[in-house]
Length: 510
Image (cartoon, rainbow, N blue to C red; front, top):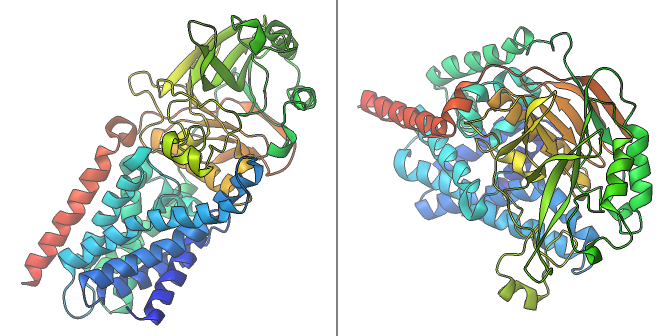
């Protein structure tokens, strides 16, 4: 492939990234994908098609994951400049998946002449498979699947309640392919796909989740706007005071008050060896926080739980959510199950530590994973599902299907994520709400904190880098969606239907 073609693919990949939050230029994403699909189709060899797919992916993921660099600004063990290399290095790996999708489409369905609908259907099925693979291999990197670009046209995004995120990404490829078919004067696919997506988009005008019933408990989401650089071991009192000021006062109506991940540094559990607490007292801390609560209120706190061996030495830690009642009692604990590699633990430490690499979360002890997804059953509120930070991005993995919760709580620490990461993280939480038909409470230290309805609408939000709190009646859940019952088997079903359509079209052309 000549330099001009390589540059074109790189630029198209970068332009495709502008359809995601915070820019939300989703029509530009469709056009960029349509042009890239044409360039892949016109590749003279499989090797050239793979190369065009990989260069597109490098441009796409370099722009889309630019926030990744910001996490290194808070890491003392490694220089911040390493973040730029890490962001590009991640893009070099992630580009493999668009490369595979383009290569499969070229190998299976490419024919001489202009692209046809068969090529588009195979491309869409290949995209579903490779996007699912990206979210699965090596613990998975599911950030920003293509279907997230539809949230500004939320009626289309709500198709994920039926088919899920990965299958909807395949439908997005069909939409881009329909634009390509218009350009090459093939009318059948555009005549079907584009009006159908238009009707789906318009459906948002008359399909919304029902309002909460009378007497519904309240939920209060707190955002203190305290950045990562302001949460050292000596800042605990200032952070706790900020949280207290925003937590409101309890009353006759029960409130579920939720705090973000990563803001309470002192330990709230009893039973640790005395040396673990330093000058802090878990009982004093719990009583202080319990004074904020009404008699029927519950406070959900993001914190750290320690594990000890038989010699009372710290052997591990968990990233946890604790439930505290008005009597200063802990009513339950959830430990994060899907940990972030290189963030909460360092893979292959025997190799990477001698190279000077460290995990991004401060501390010397790697986190250990809990069992999830899981719920906490809280008096007056029912079953509350827990998904800490990064866990919320994994489609089909956020709910205990045997014990469907009433609502999901997603505390996060998005202060690591720069300007682009927080709105992208929020968008993915909204997709989980749509897929599962469950409302979501999202609390972060610096934003964007939000109450999300079960249909993906934002009920209320605190903007990025703003201190504030929002209090609303707990949103209602919807009946279980098709996706909540079937899960990511829907991705395989939709991909198989697309391949069957491709076969039928090819036979008809003969």
